[in-house]
Image 1 (cartoon, rainbow, N blue to C red):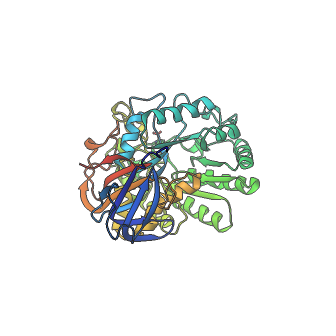
Image 2 (image 1 turned 60 degrees about the vertical axis):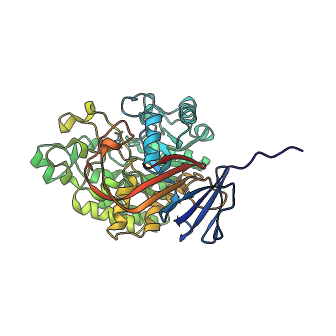
Length: 434
Ligand code: DOR
């Protein structure tokens, strides 16, 4: 008689189960078998865990789907001094992120099958969190010639974007939306009219006072308004990355009300900071799009609360000291975000802006569903990609403790509440807090 190999089973008990998509928020337990969730609920293991099953006592901590971060600059290939697949994977696990989606503006750009396969192979070699990738919309992200969207999708690209560059030509965007539509693919836009985006910070009084060239906030909404016309024309699927202005929230809200196929995300820094953070030329507060005025920040928050903004993505943009220790105008834009995504997002819950399940949905099920990833849900049969976290544990953001190779965060020393205890991918524990 052939014996079946014993199943690898782990019981997570004494947890607060949180599944944003189904609305589950209850004390209970979860069973992971061979990398999948096989059962969960308030009654599971009510009479104890049978022998032979490994047990993790969550001691009342929250057990949620692992976070899905739809906007991550891994920097490999090409800028491994800033981040690698390995360091990004460790940073993600430490941050409770079980799925990352890599941006294609690497060196070389991910614009062909070899590039998409390279990312998949490197992720397999590292065996850390799940790494999905975007492919570029245009060859070399140069904005002219479309990539092979259909074939790249077949080889695993989950959506298409030129990363930090907007697709500037209306004609190219029109073709991209039409072409992507035939395959059901999504186009993700960096919302900035390039001819207005030459500045270093938000255009306005503060930029004038600091003597820095400003990027007017209309640069963002102009690009989105143009694209929405093209979405209407083509029926394509369109997603706006890192929304930062009130006007953009407004037009997306109206487009959704008109039934257009549009979604969007923002990053924690657009919800928690405004241009004042630039203060004394702090390059850690330089991002693209730039931090805006307080009215914009509030409107972005409103957009998140009312569901106009679907998801929060870290926009993890690691930079080394050489790229940031420069005069503000020429420093690189970007903030590392994988290890601060959860605590910064939880601030919105702790300050009673948004309910816990709703908030968690924006960093789990929503981004996963927008990109069609099998992630972000705590349901039977789903991969056991789990995040166990203390909701109330107080601490301070300390970049010295980051696993990321880069430490460029304006949030150093910020008191936060919420800490990752354990991160599990396909049933495998990848991170455990000390
Ligand atoms: O601030 C940013 N930095 N925004 C982007 O869109 C790109 C990123 C980077 O690559 O550093």
